[in-house]
Amino acid sequence: HPRVLSGIQPTAGSFHLGNYLGAVRQWVALQETHDAFYMVVDLHAITVPQDPKELRANTRLAAAQLLAAGLDPDRCTLFVQSHVPEHAQLAWIMNCLTGFGEAGRMTQFKDKSARQGADRASVGLFTYPILQVADILLYQANEVPVGEDQRQHIELTRDLAERFNGRFGEAFTVPSAYILKETAKIYDLQDPSIKMSKSASTPKGLINLLDEPKATAKKVKSAVTDTDTVIRFDREAKPGVSNLLSIYSVLTGASVAELEEKYAGKGYGALKTDLADVMVEFVTPFRERTQQYLDDPETLDSILAKGAEKARAVAAETLSRTYDMVGFLPAK
Ligand code: AQP
Image 1 (cartoon, rainbow, N blue to C red):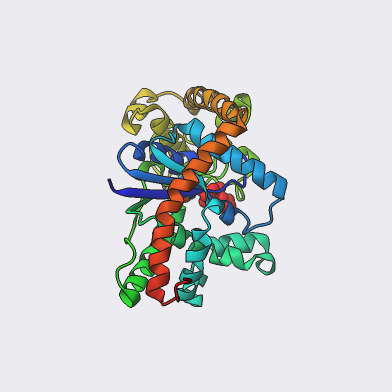
Image 2 (image 1 turned 90 degrees about the vertical axis):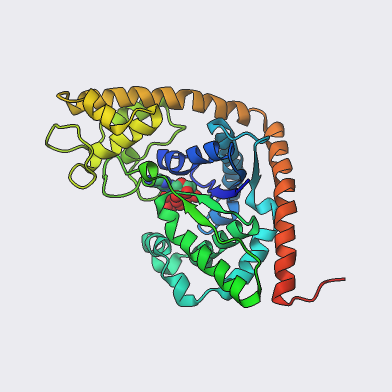
């Protein structure tokens, strides 16, 4: 089976709709066809300040949500990044292969550091994409299911894999981004010119899956559309309506064309009311399942421990070969 690897940050507590539709939903599907490795990336989380207690709780919460979304520990390897020390170890080697200017071109760092104030951004935030390179290469992943915002980091991963392979010999599989067009980018409900995001969205524009279903319904109903009333998919001219149609389509399996036909001659109100119902139907059992996993932390931790053991077997093999190729003296 081809291999996939992906990760999600535990930072925000609840996953948002962009995380789910852009990434996690694909993870669930890919565990059926791929040898799948998925992780909660706590090392990435500390690139911005975290409260230790909250980080620990949010790490369990992220794992619970991944299981609630449909990851099955018998079909995939689910683990916590810090449980596999090889991530940080390979990242160091990758840091030393990356040009300073090359890292400086990463747009996500530019955006995030600008929001924090450039002086306050950590060096860890700067090298975040290089840790991501190590995450992916350790598992020899063929594909990396992510949202569009991660495309540049996957390109960097390909460049560094090829650079290492060229300099030291074939060590790494060169991976591809796995990005579905329909859900590549979910937009903010209040400002459909920006992506839905935990740090840039306003609370009304961000759908957190663990919020009260009623609050979620309200956010959908007050989503920004436009002044005309035609329900038609047109990303340029009608970004708000198009975003709602994409979300509706993937959550129900109805095509956008079917939805356009269904709502022909009806107003935005009808579309939003129905989508609010669809959302409530989706988040209500999701919240319940997440809570069930949280109520049994021992089971949760043992799933993660088994996952880490499986992940480490693969990661350790890659790292030891890499150390050897770089020229490190074996510790005998
Ligand atoms: N709006 C989005 N549309 C589609 N996919 C998205 N992803 C995030 N936002 C959208 C995808 O979710 C996965 C996990 O994201 P993450 O939590 O690891 O990191 P992130 O990209 O930092 O999430 P945010 O909310 O966008 O955080 P901030 O506001 O800090 O930038 C990734 O595959 C991502 O592509």
